[in-house]
Length: 277
Image 1 (cartoon, rainbow, N blue to C red):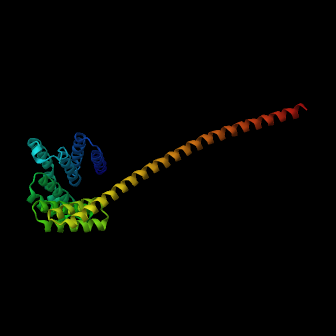
Image 2 (cartoon, rainbow, N blue to C red; image 1 turned 90 degrees about the vertical axis):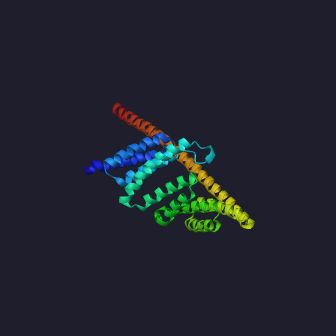
Image 3 (tube, one colour; image 1 turned 90 degrees about the horizontal axis):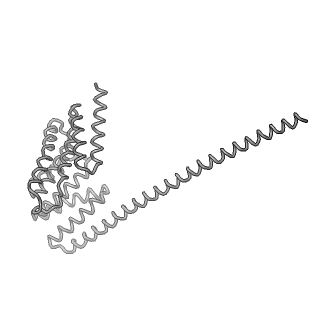
């Protein structure tokens, strides 16, 4: 039974991994539903919770989060929020027993993003503050994200100093760990904060830093693309060399066979000459 359970868990993980790779949200949801059934069958609460979290994110992704609040369909928002929170509540219940800090931080991040989406700034602040306080070292990028969101919330509430404090901590962590993508977002947020506060000098400074970081990121991305092209080129060259080698090997084998045939013919001819003589 233990071996069977192990194989089922592997299948459940494979289904979830496959789900995360598909862009089709309906297909992703079906695959995640299958993985949840398997993990529930094997009484694997941790993996079941991870799949439920992914389900909540999938339903949340059904909405365009960039749509202005006045242009949203309230019924659609309500439906997908209920579907997402249905899974988040299962995770929350499971984690009361497991007490997993990564699950807790992921859950609070999802709650915070929903509250922010709906303009519930105080509830969003509570959720992201919980992330900052309780997130483990393994999810340090999640802490940076939470600090940036807190900075945005404080800015919306016109609490500029609190916003700057959050941003400075996010800046420090990102600089220490080389989180360049986050640094670009942080510099953009700095510029926005200083502009709101009427500080033109720092607004221009961080706008320049933001632009430079974007150029750096684009250069890195382009270098990665060039590196990929070079690797593909080298691979093609190697494949061509292998094909040439195979062709040359076949040609050499044919020459050897022909040479062997000629040698045998000469030996037979020589033998016959000696015999006739």
